[in-house]
Image (cartoon, rainbow, N blue to C red):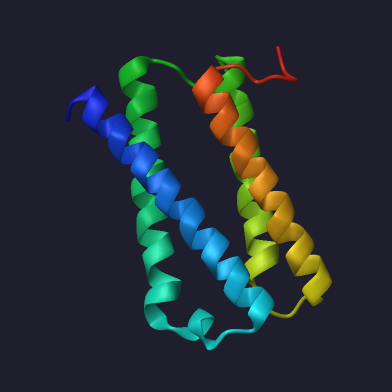
Length: 126
């Protein structure tokens, strides 16, 4: 697959991932039954799998790897934090205020990931 096409697929999946996460957060805040729909539980996993696969392919094609380039390391570590916050935000059973806080924090982390990707600079890391 062509690098440019792969990168466009990656960006499109990232945008869809964020939109889906944002929407599920709104539904969580409102207590919507939409969160119980089967497709709402499945589609994000499919999209995020394509997102991760495209990220790995782009890293391999460009030879820019985590723990070699600082900005890529920052992206991967921020991704782990984003996933953890997302799990905390969207899994029932925790206090609503904690879930909302995790949802908001995850959006900040996602913004950081995008900024690192665009600038290829970790900002706070060398």
